[in-house]
Image (cartoon, rainbow, N blue to C red; front, side, top):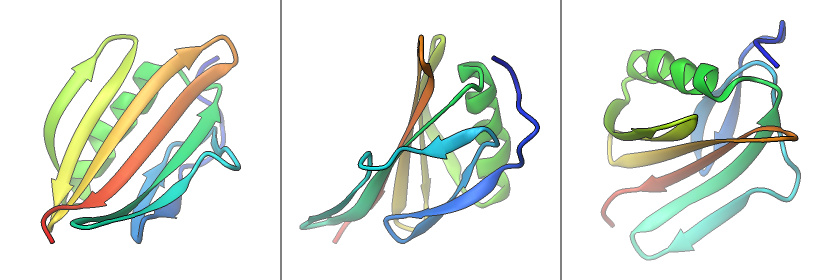
Length: 112
């Protein structure tokens, strides 16, 4: 456990480019594109050996610099963060398990 030497990278989720902490890798089959009236977006799941609190810290530092506003958070040994920007919303959930940390990112559009 701990921070790995790998660099952060970016992934496109539901037409939105999202930063991903170093050490977190996309889980195949863990994503979906969502097409519902008023909600065009997607979901991606990542796993890694990065402490949940480090993942939360990464997003709290990274997202405001990309123009995202933090709207809500629930933090307890991981947690959930909600951000919004330009008619889009992102919900980031971080959960710790024996196999490592799971990062779940849900991206959607607000309104029509």
